[in-house]
Amino acid sequence: MTADDAWRLPPWWVLLVAVLLIVCAELGGASMVRFKLELARWARDAMLARPAVHGLVGVRDVDERILDEALVKFDAGLRLFHLHAEGMGLVIIATTSVAATLGGRRAGRALIALLTAGGAGYPLGYLLWSALIPYRGIEEGKAIAEWSVWIPFGGATIVALWWLAGLVTLRMLRR
Image 1 (cartoon, helix red, strand yellow):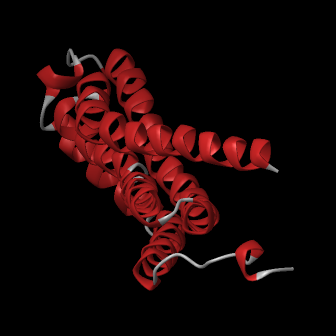
Image 2 (cartoon, one colour):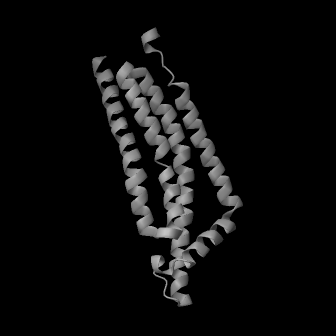
Image 3 (spheres, one colour):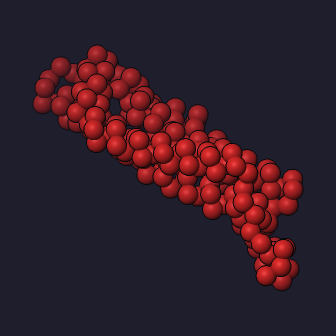
């Protein structure tokens, strides 16, 4: 193995971001279990305080179905944060290692920045969506999370991954 074939580590701050994201995922997962009832009560009370947002009509049989659906989505958003933050932490480590090794000086820095920012930001959209459900409803909360977090951060990650795939392909073709 030559020095040109050696893998390079990404900058220390990238590894720190990835590890912190995984730690947040674990804390989020533990908090979901520990505070499940408290979170559900808080979300339900916030939804009951905004009946027009959720389409509540004041009939218990009708309202309970609407509230149950919103609470399921609220819980799903928290769970999706937990899962995506764990996964994206690992994706950041793996992909930025490849970018540091194959990207060169300028391209490598840009790739590392896109992969780190996109990977760390994307899971936060699920937290935002969950936090918005009691106040803005399921669909409006999702739309806000999509446009403010998922599209820009997810888009950055997708662009960077395609760019990285191109670099890997070029490297393989050169051999």
